[in-house]
Structure formats: C-alpha cells, structure tokens
Amino acid sequence: MRHKVTVGLLSAARMMGVMSGCSPATKQDEMLVGLLQDGYVPLVDAMVSAGFEQVPEETTSYLNADVGYSVRFDFDGGKVEKDRFTFDLPDCFVLHENQYFIRPDFLTTVVNKNFSLQSSGVMAEPADLNTHEWKNQANKLVAHAGGALRDEEYRLYTYINNVDTIVQNYDLGHRLFEVDFNQTSDGRLAANHDWAFAGYDDGAPDSATWAAHKVRNRFQSAFIEDIYRTMLINEDMYLIPDTKAYDMTQEEVAAYYQSLVDIANTMNPDLLDRVIPAFYNKEMYDTIKSVYPFRSIIFTLYASEDTFEEVAAFVADKEDIAVVLTPSHKKNRWFVDTLHESGKELFVHGANLNEIAQFAELRRFGVDGFVTDFLTPSVMVGLESGQYLEETIQAPTV
Image 1 (cartoon, one colour):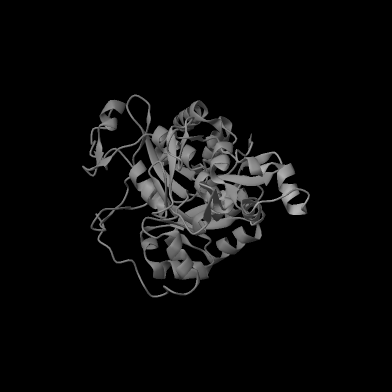
Image 2: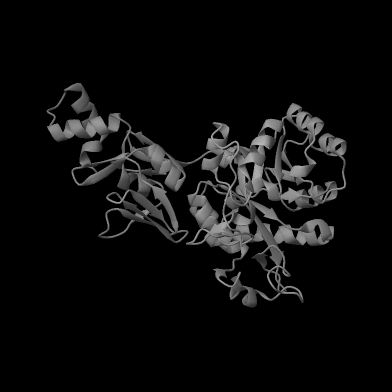
C-alpha cells in the first residue's frame, strides 16, 4: 500500500534537485534530504501507508479502524502504546519542521510491516512469513497457557489462558503462545485448561457463564475470538492451540478444528497462517489436515504411544512438520540426533522448565526450543552467554 508523502519537499524531483544542485536548496531542504538518506521515514506517511488513520488533533496517535485499536507515540516518555501493548521507544526518531521522522526498522517491530521510501512515497508491505518461521521467534520459547501472569507483588499465576497474560508476556518478548481451548456447552471455544480446573466439576458451562467467569477469581476469562484479536493487533504473534484431544473422537477433533478455522475465516483468514496445531497421534494428523491445510504443525508426544523410532520415521518426509514436542524427562540422544538429521527440531515441556539450570542442561543435550511458564526471551539471551548457568527462578507461584 502506497501513501504519497505529505511533506512537499519529499517529491522525487525536489529531492534530486537538492542533491544534484540543479535548483536552489534551503538549509531545511538539506536537513530533510539528509534524514531520508540516513534511512528515516516520515511517521505520519508510514503509518497511513500501513493502514492507520491519524487521530484528529493528536499528531502522534493513529487508529486502525479495521481491527479497532490505536497506536500512540509518547516521544517525551520514550514509549509506544499499541492497544494494551507497550514498546520502549529508543532514540530512533527526529523532529523536523514539526513532523516526526522515525527509523523504519523500529516501526516494523511495532506495526509488523516492512517500510521503504520510494519516489512515489512511503510503501508499507506485510512482513514475509516463512512456513516455519514461527519456531525461530522469541529465542525459541513458547509461553505455556499464555505464560505466567505476574501481579503487583510479583506472584506468578499459571494456567491463566487469557488476554491479560498474553499482553504481559508479549511485552516481555514472547511471540509464541500455547493456549488451551475447551468447548462450552453451546459450542464456543473457551480459553481454558479444563473445566474441572476452572471449578466446573459438572462439565462445561454455557458461553454466557464463561464470559462472566473470573479465572482464579480475579482475571477475565477469554474465548478464541479474544486471542485472535491480539493476533490481528500483533502480526508477529503465533498461536499453538492445545485441544486436549487425546480423549476426543476423530469426529470431535474435526469439529473442534472446523470451529477454529471458521472463526478465523470470519475475522481474517490470514490468521490461519499463524496457527500451529499440535497433534497427538498419526490419525489426528490426518483429521486436522482434512479440515484445513495448515502450513506448519507439531507432533506432540505427551499422550502418544508411538516409539521414538516410529515418530522419527513418520515425520521424516513431512514438510509441514518442523517440530516435535516431548516432555523434558523423555529426552533421548538418538531421537534428538535423528530429528536433526532430517531437518526437524525438538522442543520440550515440563515443570522443570521454569529453572534456568534445567534449560542449560537441555540446551547442551541438543534440545532446540522450550515451553515455559516463567522464563522470558531476555533470560535466554543470558543463558546463551553463560550468565545464568547455576541460577534458578525464585518467585512464589499461585
């Protein structure tokens, strides 16, 4: 999508004139061209090119009317607020003639578009999504059940599965979110580990009851539509839905995924490019693929009866399977090496994956990625540098 740059000095002819000396250039002209040559783009033009509208009388606020959220640049406070999400704003902007210019690489992290300045103006294009690009995000960490939710006293609440915990963990650097879903009695996909865990011992409530439910008596419940909306706001966010399908019939699995696909198609079909299903057995793989041709899919082994040899043989020639997920205590040297030889990666999950020392041990073993409640991508940077080899997370868990 192109947007003609609104600053008159930005026409290609004027730029060429200033740079070549073919026409008189003011000092302001030269400063402007210098900014452009240094890689800055006009903020307002870039945002409009990315599909936003400038909020009237608010020169640093922009509205995405399609999804229904705003982005506000607080240049004095060094923050960018995007709906409920917050980004630190580094020294990557310049105020020139009452207009802000900004580095496009930073703007890409906020609005998930690639920007370029061409003779016709600023161009914004969607970031390219490689089929298996998701597995390289956030230092290969997956936020389990949306990640732990930290309250004001830094108590950690797990298995929340709601927008609050996704917002907090996205701000901490996570981009891969595993979220549990179960169907309400009237067929809606509720973000919830299981109904007994949520206090419904007699089975699934209806959607109206779940909508009013408070997780752990304090956090707002969510449906898949709420999770999808966060993905529309953040186009670098990926969802790994956990169906708990090991006790479902294949007909129930198909109905579950059909609902997931139908809702995405209603909101924005492109969402499905960032949904990474997990299957528990070979039959379930075929069932999911019969519903929708997901670009990437995970073989998760915690409920599988297949041997390592059977799993390795099954995934070897399947291009849509890039990752196998297994409990951390089931790691196996032959299995890790065989997966790597076939171009696959091994991710692990388990209670001990909230301790940094366990991460270090598993990384040395050859494990590629991790599902965790507490650890963040920034901690993984320290782990890779050897900073945290003997430390563990010390925080009360609720």
